[in-house]
Image (tube, rainbow, N blue to C red; front, side, top):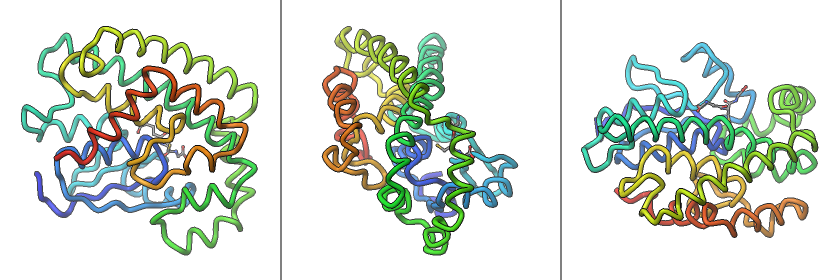
Amino acid sequence: MAGKPCIRLITIPMSHYCEKARWGLERLGIEYHEERHLQVFHYPRTFWFSGGPNVPVLIDGVKVVHDSTAILEYLDSYADADRRLYPLDSGLRQQVSELEDLFDEVLGVESRRWVYYHFRSRPMQALRTAGQGTPLIERLLLPVIYPLFVLLINRLINPSQRAVEEGLDKVRALVKTTDSLLAEGHRYLLGDQFTAADLSLACMLAPLVVPRNYGIRLPEPEQMPVAARPVIDEFRATATGAYVLKLFATEKNTV
Ligand SMILES: N[C@@H](CCC(=O)N[C@@H](CS)C(=O)NCC(=O)O)C(=O)O
């Protein structure tokens, strides 16, 4: 599959679920075309290809794969043994899948809620980050549909102060677990192999530690809203935060 130029990935470029799929593709050295859209404008494309609202969607000829985990699993079937993200050993694979689901469904949901909460009052800065590589027409039209966009985000993500605070507590508890796993002293979360669990942890925590080397340019911590900075400092100071920054620095683009 490597070198097939026809693979397309439909994304909302800032989405950490999309980062997960991009990282998987890049790790295998697969050439692909990323079709980037702003939130809401992605609907016609995702509904057309996958029948649902979510990105990422991968299109490989007539094959359509949606959901970041399903995409990594699909890509893994083409990976050489040393690049596999899912171990062949069934017990280990089970552990990888359980962690990956936890990161996607708890950490990813809460880190996204936190981002939307802090950028609600900064639509222009949010647009500069979220709009990278998206069609000009979408960036011009976003201010026009902004009220609809806010309504939708409130319904889908609920970025209320209370939900954000409760969410951060869930993330703190989860990070304690990953800190303990890392304290076992292996190179990666579950041993000597970089797996989908590491990749998912890195992407889902990314909004809270703002790494360099993300698939789009993220704001530097000092460009983040003042109220957001202590949380970034807090998570960067954990063993898990430092580990995620290291993965972005050393495991991306290492084909
Ligand atoms: N479990 C899915 C989650 C994907 C997801 O939530 N994508 C968001 C972007 S961060 C999305 O497409 N949201 C659009 C919507 O819900 O309307 C995955 O891993 O791919």
